[in-house]
Length: 211
Image 1 (cartoon, helix red, strand yellow):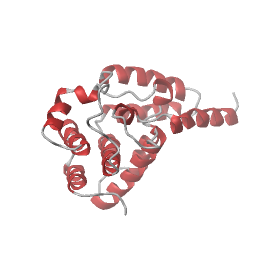
Image 2: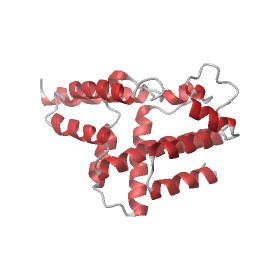
Image 3: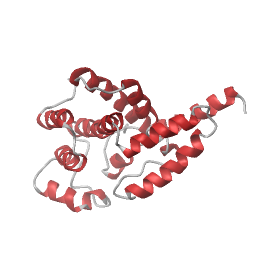
C-alpha cells in the first residue's frame, strides 16, 4: 500500500466521525435541528485543553494532550458511540482497543499512536488525566448550552434508559434541571481536580451562551 493511500484511507475513516452523532444527546431526545457529532466533540476537547492550559498553568506536555484528544475517539469509527449506561467500561475498553489496533496498523506511527490512546484510557499520567477531564468537561459545557436553549423536555423521556438510572433519577427528583443534574453527576463520578471543579461550578452558576 502506498504512502498516499495510507494517508487517504486514514483520513476517510476518521471523516466518518463527522456523521456519528453523540449518543447521549440522542438518548435524551435533544430537540434541535443539529446535534453535536463526535468530530465536533473532539474539536471542543482540544480547544478546552488549550484554554485550561493557558489560564491554569498546568505542568503538562500540551502537544501530547492535543494529540491524545485528537485521536481519543478513533475507536468510534468502528464501534460507534457507546455510553457507560449501555456497556461496561471494561467491555468498551476491550472492544475499543481491538478497533484502534486494526485502524492504526497500516500507519508508520501506528504503534506510537496506539500507545497514546492506551495511555489516555489508563489515566495514570498527568497528560492523560488532564485530557480525560477535558473530555468530560466538554460534554458538560455542551449540555449546559443545550439546556440554555431549552432543548430537552424532562417529561418526554419514556424510552431513555439513562433517565432511569438511580443516581440520575435521584438528582432529577431533587428538582435539578437537566444540565444541573448532568454536572453534579459528573462532579461525583469523575473527581475533577480543583481547577476543573472550579470551572464546573462556574458553569452551574452562570449562563454561558454568548449573546
